[in-house]
Length: 311
Image 1 (cartoon, rainbow, N blue to C red):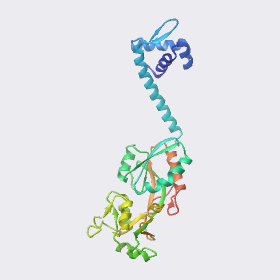
Image 2 (cartoon, rainbow, N blue to C red):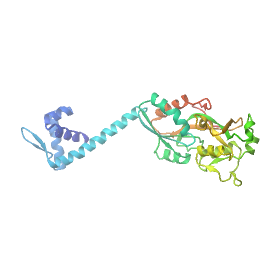
Image 3 (cartoon, rainbow, N blue to C red):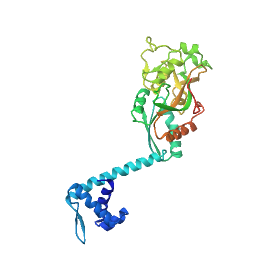
Image 4 (cartoon, rainbow, N blue to C red):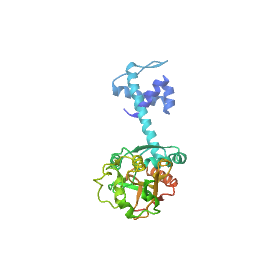
């Protein structure tokens, strides 16, 4: 039994005629009839009742036909899947992004991506770095937009942009009168951090030259799981925090009495890259995605060249 035999079976059942079925399958009628007879002999059943005027499928043949149609549908699905991989810019592209990137990058990306590559369908997951790396290795997503520099050797990356940190504090802070933020300013502020597991928390500590989290005082337990919550705490006067530059776009921080200042200090930035499995077959799709991202970035971040190495 092979796929061709099942296609002959479907054609005879749908046309009710061996000659018409042969025409549909582009073979001679003796060839088609002979293959149907071989299929019946192999299965040990009669698929069709024949006479000089008509062909009728048997009840057993109906059951076999139902399975044959399901198989034919699956084969067609495989063909369509293969066709999408022939054109890497067509079809779904499941990616992940960390929560301190996704809400600020996606509004800049989605419409331009649809205009540039209308056949590409982005499917987004938003999770922490460790979980996204796990899902990437397990082939649950095709790529991940991350601010990390230590994935394993089975992954490769496309550098996207360098994003500086800005200091956010409330309007009543003594820092309001400072045109530039110094390391001494950072040392003297009550710094609010995201909860453990967020890479931004560790990056903030590195930027501020902190060796460990604050474990005493009023700020010790004020940690948040989102930038939105951090900004609310800053607006309420509980301290200050570092905000990635891309998060300054839009008006989500306006009207809250939160002031931001750029940092002119060493290592107060993070590099964002698109990570993927080295063996991933649709790398052209990721290159196209990276190109759209870089083309729509604001001037608060710096686009990275393809051969950029993090330092």
